[in-house]
Image (cartoon, rainbow, N blue to C red):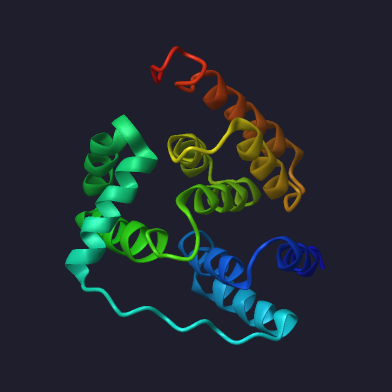
Amino acid sequence: MRKIEAMRTAAEVASPGAVEEALLQSYLFLGFPAALTALAEWRELSGGRALPEPEPMDLEDWRRRGEEVCRTVYGRAYDKLRASVRRVHPAMDAWMIQEGYGKVLAREGLDLKSRELCIVSILSATGWEPQLHSHLRGALHAGCDEASVEYAVEAGLEFTDSGVWREAARHLWSRVRERSPARSGGRES
């Protein structure tokens, strides 16, 4: 029921295209079945049709755009992230850049700030702490103000029943906020 209420609220405050983009990108964090179900529910609720897709891009375009967006999100930690993901598995590094950042997060229809706030909400709801940490910082790197990031954290936490996780997520946000460049004289700590 909370999902439908959230979609109704989204329909009131955002364009149909922005809602669709947020739901499309959710597959990166929630999985294909969840995103497909959410899009079907959105389609039923909105009564609209899917927006036409832009011209397809090739893998090289996705890689180039993905590197650019990922660099923005991760800032100085970009090279460290890439090396870390490559150590886990080289295919995951390529997929993260081409698929995640290039094909999905670099799409038109939703600006990077809004995309990062959606990601923060999803990760706050699902409890993936390392990724939440990265995207809290990423939201700030993308230009989100602290109040918007905090709102996104709290919006996501409404979808979890774990008091332990709520406390951990809020503490994590507090640590990220205190170390943000805006509070540390332009230096990231």
